[in-house]
Amino acid sequence: MIVKICGLRRADHASAAAAAGADWIGLVFAASKRQVSVAEASAIAMALREGVTPPPLLAGLFVNEAPATITAIAHAVGLDLIQLSGDEPVEYADALRLPVLKTIRLTGAPAEQAWIARARREQPEREAVSARTPPRVLLLVDAHVPGSYGGTGTPADWSRAAALAAQTPLILAGGLHPANVARAIATVRPIGVDVSSGVETDGVKDPARIEAFIAAVRSA
Image (spheres, helix red, strand yellow):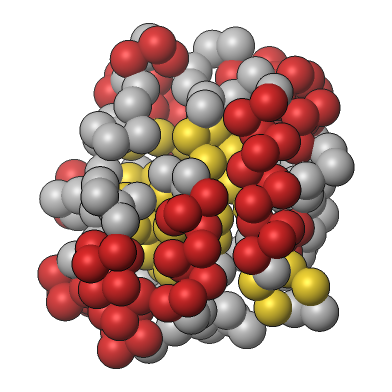
């Protein structure tokens, strides 16, 4: 079970997440209260690579950014994954050299269906997905909140996510926290989970909640 802790802004919080067993660390480059600069992201990356062996993979989250800009930031920071959380067309998968984690919200839109089809072609067997070697395209299911591209703390549609998870590997996000993540895993059966606001206290990442979240995932 892959665990991704997203929206980290401080090196000490990222190091705490890594020490607790996080597989992936998410850094938000899109406009958000959790947005980091390239310099801040680079400092986090350096702290992780100096403090943990092997370090968690770094995922950079972008919303409707040009592939050239994404590539430049990925190179500057040393990202391992690109998370696309906007309305990006499936052609981005070929424009970016790193593995792509594509956020979908189960709206049935043609662009989402194209990403689902691409993910199925890239990685049909859930048993073959590894945290250290992610597939070329992997889906992340989040809640559909009109006007928002994520980070709302709203639960995704677990029943629809479960139906998709039975067909192709996916990461589950949206409204997860230490008290409900085990039930979410049992219901949806994803290959991984993603959390941001669910491990915060007063809008700030809380190392104790991060540790509790990861412990709940491992026990599930």
